[in-house]
Length: 65
Image (cartoon, rainbow, N blue to C red; front, side, top):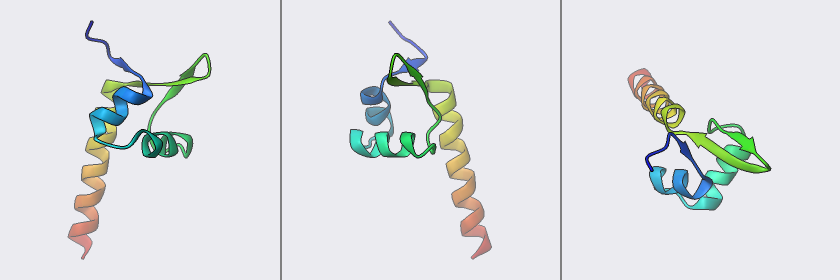
């Protein structure tokens, strides 16, 4: 089943992060997520948008140097 909703383990794998790092970023509000029954869930479309925002931010920082 191809779902737009990912678990913490799936988002960590998708972003090639350690699960602890993904959890920290989520709990700090840096990754877009929501809770279902006490467990974090992620919409793939929102994670993809977040990635694009990170790329744009990195490019702007690079351009300012």
